[in-house]
Image 1 (cartoon, rainbow, N blue to C red):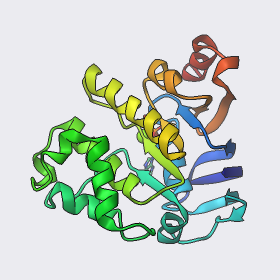
Image 2 (spheres, protein in one colour; image 1 turned 120 degrees about the horizontal axis):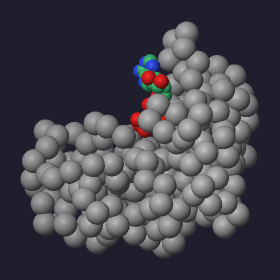
Image 3 (cartoon, helix red, strand yellow; image 1 turned 90 degrees about the horizontal axis):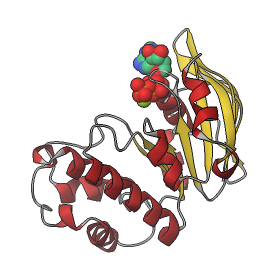
Length: 230
Ligand SMILES: Nc1ncnc2c1ncn2[C@@H]1O[C@H](COP(=O)(O)OP(=O)(O)OP(=O)(O)O)[C@@H](O)[C@H]1O
Ligand SMILES: [Mg+2]
């Protein structure tokens, strides 16, 4: 599905990601690591919002190292950024319709599908997204990304700041999106325990480098936590 080889990227003169290799199949793939480890930088690099300084990025066998972000969205990669992931002055429905610019099925059927998955926001379809709770606005951000008919969703810490009830609900939806829509998921998380409950593979970033990359079944929390102490 997605393949990164020797990826280096960062901001201006500052290199953050160093020689990152990663292969995502049709699975839920967790990206863990301490604050500042480079998880969001990785997400932005894959979404082509940051220039690739070195290395190759392939999506479904195609070299996408230099394609424009909107072309990547059209090809099937959707990003839910960590911050500022909704348009607060637009309604819930308007936010979702922004996700239906590309794709084949009607905008309406895709928005209905999002409302089926997230009944909480269906009841607030005409409310300004800026007036929603944290959990509800995260559902809108998810919903917009899902309305793009993605083959791969990049979720950047979707559960941060949410109550335990919403954390569980959102991760259950992640699993559902993967299982019923066949969407591959790259999930950056602070909450390692929760991420490992849904993911089949895990990668730990430490200071911009891959510290560990393993099937979840072949590693444990202790090994993962090693990546937080260097
Ligand atoms: N716009 C930017 N300009 C310069 N440096 C940046 C920028 N954004 C992030 N960085 C730096 O890049 C490094 C990695 O940050 P990044 O946001 O990718 O970490 P993260 O793993 O997502 O952390 P968190 O868990 O806190 O979200 C940090 O040292 C950060 O200060
Ligand atoms: Mg981040």
